[in-house]
Amino acid sequence: MSESQKETFRKYLEASGALDNLVKVLVSLYEEPDKPKQAQDYIKAALGAPTPAEYEAVVAERDSLKRQLEEAQLKISEMEAKDAGGEE
Picture 1: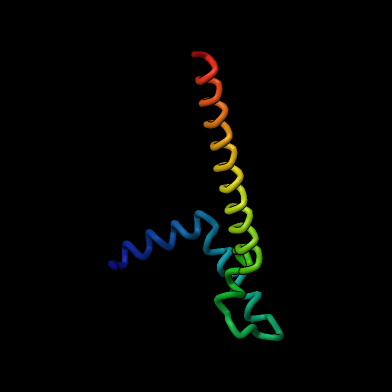
Picture 2 (picture 1 turned 90 degrees about the vertical axis):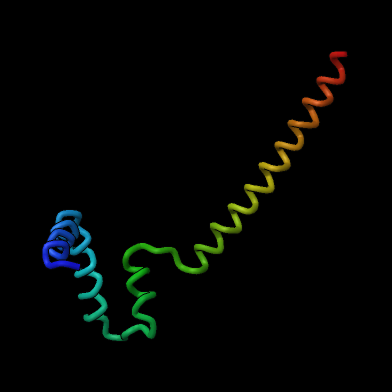
């Protein structure tokens, strides 16, 4: 990566506010009296990533909604077939 590419990227990070957010998170990690075992997990949480439990809950809800949608689509198909059969 050339120096001009690095400088362009740095300016992009500054303009978007990403650099400030990263610095704030790293400073808060530095100031943390009880350092977490996994710095990466701390950074993810500080930036708003879901916890594993939150992620699993969203996946479970998604799966439930998929099943409900499939059941509703099946009922619609059955009702359409029944309706089409009654029109003859």
